[in-house]
Every structure is written in C-alpha cells, then in structure tokens.
Image 1 (tube, one colour):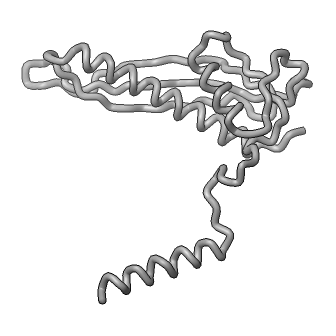
Image 2 (cartoon, helix red, strand yellow):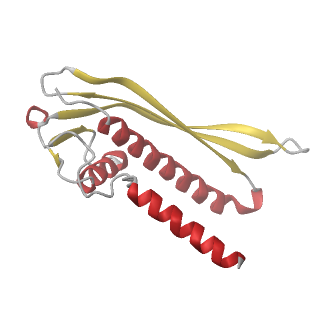
Length: 167
C-alpha cells in the first residue's frame, strides 16, 4: 500500500506542475536572447569565443554578426585570466590542495555604442587536490576544471544577456 500511495502522490505532483504552466527554461524552442544578431569581440581562435558562438547559435534565432555595425548587441571581452593559489600544505610542507580561479570581464553594447550591460566581472573558483605521484593526471584534471569554469562563464554571460532589454 505504501508504494501505491507514493505513486499517487507523484502523479498528483506531476499533474499540479503541468496545470500551473511550469516549463523548463529554454524548453519552448524559442531564443532566450532578445537580439536578432550578436557580434562577439574576441579573436577567431579564442576557445572562449568559439564556445560563446556555439551557445549563441544553439540558443535559437540569434545570428552571429561578422561586423559590429551590423549587430544588435556587441559582446566585448575586456579580460580573461587563470590563477592558481595554494590552498593547503601537508605535514612535510608540500602542497596538498590548490584553488583555481577563472576571471573574466566583459560588457555588452549596442551598435550605437550605448552600454546595455556595464563592465562586469565573473569570478569562478574550483579546488583541486594535488598528488606528486599523479602529476600528469592532476594537470589534465586542472585543464578540465578550467574548461568547466569557462563554460560556466559563457552560460552566465548568456543568462545576463537574456535579461537585457534591447534599445
């Protein structure tokens, strides 16, 4: 009987959520960006730029402009840096953990140079343990964590842009 009650409760919850209009973000198939075209001011070979362009294209109807004068919004990446700081040491004084930081500054303008989003800094942090016997594996893990932080930063940029009102 307990199993049946749980099933009925789950069914009631699903019915209630569907009746209230609940919908996952981005599941309506429409673009979450309020701009028809976006220019991304980073070098063509930049991993950050490649990922930003990929996410913008996947967001729906927004196109990537090749010229800033043709874009409704211009994303200027003002700076990007990676830092590594010692978090803890073992009893022999050797490093046991690091903190990895990914910092990125950007702003969003329209084609008339009006600021839609002032210079904004995104700072992300991940902690990583260190083991001298697994140096190569830990370097690869560090690279993966930096790529993960970069993806998080791209998603934060797009969420902030989705909240903007075009001029």
